[in-house]
Image 1 (cartoon, helix red, strand yellow):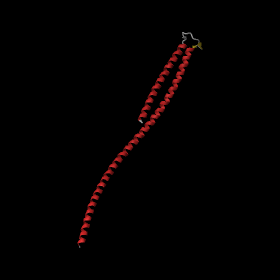
Image 2 (image 1 turned 135 degrees about the horizontal axis):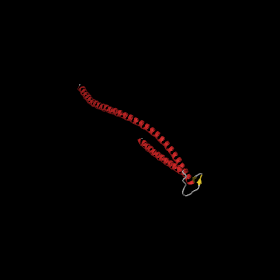
Image 3 (image 1 turned 135 degrees about the vertical axis):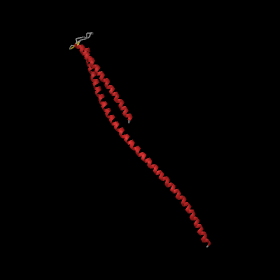
Image 4 (image 1 turned 180 degrees about the vertical axis):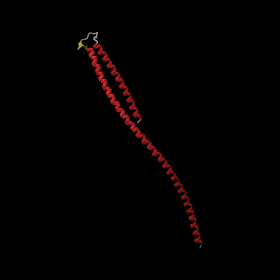
Length: 162
């Protein structure tokens, strides 16, 4: 999960960098537009002698339209980037919550595993003890069976003598 958080953080960082770059471009284009508008209002004409439209040459109007279009595009990209940043931040919060839940579940599972290991060792000791006791009882039973057989044989011998 941490890999997902790391990837989200990288994407978030890239989006911040893109946003900064777009904001720089918007500032640059605005300053260029302001300079061109100032030049146009100072009465400086294009040395090429292009025709004027409402007191401004067509080249300047084209540049202004292009700058306005670029500004609009950059503003749109900025809004879109901010939306992505918000979505990624929400995703990070969600993933961090998952990480917390998974860590908690893992810790609980490890605790249960440790308890089960202790119980298993206890049961194995009890099993060894019971098997040892069975072995003792079987040996005792075999010994008593032999004694019983000897006693039966002795009784049969005594009965045969009588």
